Image (cartoon, rainbow, N blue to C red; front, side, top):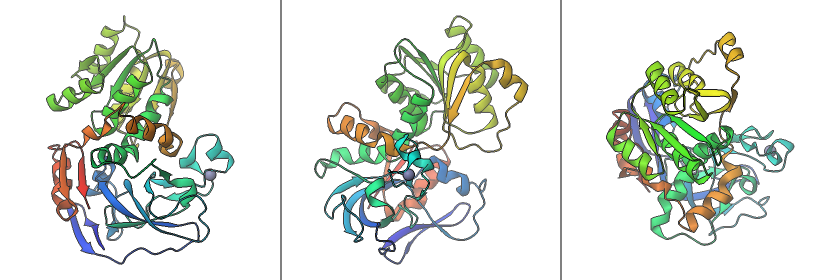
Length: 340
Ligand SMILES: [Zn+2]
């Protein structure tokens, strides 16, 4: 098969690779219908995360099941499936509480890399969710978005306790932040403030339901959120970046008693204990348990209630993955879909 390997920062190649095989009886092999490049793939691409060796890339996937191991009971060849970046048994106590990304048996969802023609998915019954039928082509981008960025934005909104009567601020205008806007709207928020300085991202935020745009960031951004909320701060703030500045912006933009849902992968974030103590805000986040939300998100997409696939503003063949990375690194693209 063909698949993406990152050799070093900035060095992404599409290569001939071994086809994945069934290793454990609970595995499935899927043939990808489409895959994509994640904002988190840019951390090693930019040299922020160290790469020890050439690494298969990609953790977002949708596709048709080709084969299953003899321990797989519910997932069958021929089904079109969506899964998450962590595989989970979906039966342990942590999974049943809705925290499948922390499953006691968790492992990488697509350890063989999902930016490829085929992928091995462990714990297939617990990890994969089948669509009612193979989807029409126009739904594939949205189903692919459900695999990570929509599920992550959704969890961020839930963690931030979004609901009717609430004002929500969203820090970060990448795919997750933008879909956090969509999730906040779906979950009934009254007002959704997107923080973005980019015209095209502001436009998409509005399309997804943002009622206000704040272009300022850092302390100026916080002051702007307070201006818009009678000096109190937002009830709910979604943090979808993962830097010191974005995390503090989120905490300081939240009113006492409010909630921060943080899903940007933290990089060198240090929380000042005393400020946190006196802020009176709730903090919850981490790697999103996307699996918890997949049935609901697939249903919303299937009924065409949401169109999260709009975050893909660049579509390239898998062979041109290197250009897809470059476009996202240079912020020319929000998110790149790779056709397989
Ligand atoms: Zn589990």
